[in-house]
Image (cartoon, rainbow, N blue to C red):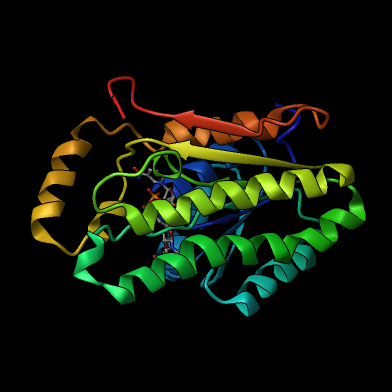
Length: 246
Ligand SMILES: NC(=O)c1ccc[n+]([C@@H]2O[C@H](COP(=O)([O-])OP(=O)(O)OC[C@H]3O[C@@H](n4cnc5c(N)ncnc54)[C@H](OP(=O)(O)O)[C@@H]3O)[C@@H](O)[C@H]2O)c1
């Protein structure tokens, strides 16, 4: 689609799952990608794969929980490609647990990555987008950003926050022609559940994830939001497996 061709797109959490699938989808449609995550080997492999298929991608090892590194990521995109059209704040972690277990380190990581990481991503790209009066910020929330489940209190808290922040951004920045999109996936087959430290809960989630669909399903939804004409904003999408109830 012409609306993806040559767009400069930063994707956080590009080293696996939804981020990796989104990178492949957008590369096949002609985007210029800036891939970010912490695992260098995975980013390098993905860059090579995209380039071997005729796509364009660069990468930068980045921890989204560091504001400084997120600013460096945006600076790198501007230096290499001259503009940032789309920011996909996708990086996230989901170490689910009930509150009484008091896994404070896991709470802190979820808050740092899922909330602060998204805020730092927005802050890093907003100045150049406001200057150009053009841009698109896509934040990955979750079904858990609409509903709360046992053991999802903190994770849901972070994903509700992503939706609140994105809606706030929309009403602050539409005037600058900046589009926002909230993506709320249901069960998607990725590495996300590997961070669940409780073995019983992990088995229950493994069972629930048997209906999970491929990350490419979310990649196509993200591409759909990006490829709309610039006067059309797809503000929110929920994408579940057809057979997922909640
Ligand atoms: N899978 C699902 O069922 C599902 C459902 C709803 C929402 N989501 C959301 O979808 C997003 C993508 O998750 P996924 O399912 O694709 O899981 P995934 O395969 O585990 O991918 C998570 C990505 O986030 C990156 N990441 C984690 N911590 C980071 C940090 N501090 N700095 C930079 N990158 C970091 C990881 O890369 P590194 O480890 O290399 O840094 C990885 O690329 C998340 O926001 C998740 O909450 C997923």
